Length: 177
Image (tube, rainbow, N blue to C red):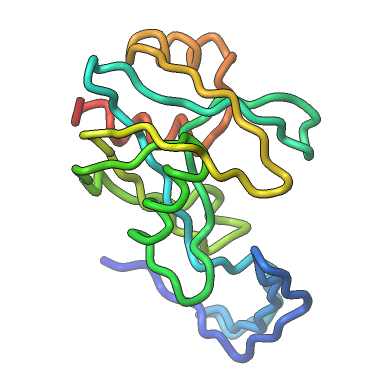
């Protein structure tokens, strides 16, 4: 039996920037009570697990401002207006890892923080990779690491890899490898 749904009464934008829209919805619960829900709206994101010809995985190490520390993770980026998940995956793989893929597999999707955002992250496995010059944004600097699946998983278990989206994606793709 499905759970009762809430009814959206109105929706307004608080702040919009190039990456997110901060929204506030008024809603009515099945009981008739009304309230507000504040959340982050995005167009989604594309996360890529690049599998090299020798079976190793390409991960990017980058500085994460909010936590003031480096983070080892799979290439990932937000879907911009008028772009698709596929466009974003292709662009982010080249931009962050300096790779172009011949083979793509959509492995699954997840919401990285479903109480705060309506973002859906689509997870890809990329193979048939060719190295090209990377094209990072002005705020990005990347170090590329090539790790075996076992090394990657060990770093997740030990806490060296602490990025939640990378760990969620790994749980989706590991059976595809």
